[in-house]
Length: 303
Image (cartoon, rainbow, N blue to C red; front, side, top):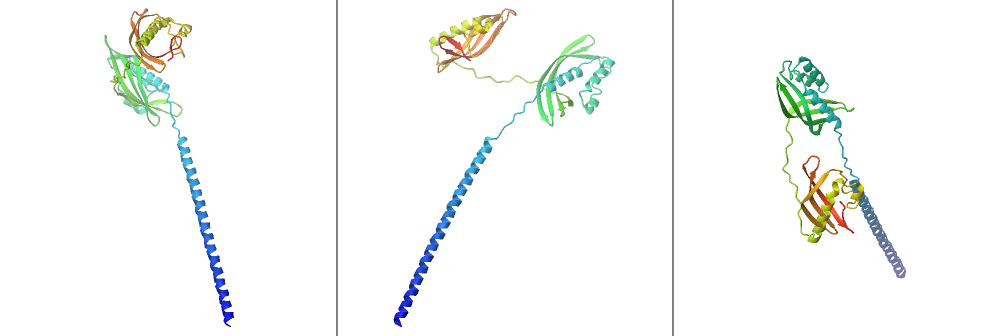
């Protein structure tokens, strides 16, 4: 009985041991499976982030800025025709009525009504237009454009005449087929004034030695002496890449004025004013040049 019990107990112990071993193996399989899932997930996330970054970069590269070029020829021509008709009249009833009829073809109905009494039947003056300058054409909104212009008028009253110059601003609307109408009456404006901008003047920086300065100066004096009447073939001995065009003028070379020299590698840059006598008008003509010279066998103007 005891032997049987021991043998049975031994079998039970072995069975438990075997079951514990099986459970241990199962745990490792789950761990390995979890690690594989984690690895595959990390790889998939990395690939997703990589493609996302590429997509974002591609969108940035494809960004395009469009520039719209505005053709102002029609607006300028329409404005000039209006100015000529608007500021021209004779102190006669028929002339004033004709002016009003012409002006109506430029203005909206509201502006026609507004301008009814601007030129009266008994006006003592007459006006003629001698000059029109368009200073600016700029977009406002909804196909509406602002135009600033000046007009020169000869005003005559009795036997006295005087010249006046005035500047105005109008608004025009252009429809989908290109037709124009003035939507704002000529309004007093100001002329563009002289800017106080002064460009920085180049200065000799000591990079060109005295011998080179003398050579280049002699070359330029020779060149500009015959340049006004030089042909294309003659220019080819002194000029490359069509850096200077033929001008075919009757000018007499006088001198170079304030030449400035700078050297860069094998090139010499020269800023110079050239004084000529115009044989026709008998006036002095001063041309300004910015030149780049190179020396092979002889000096050549390359830019």
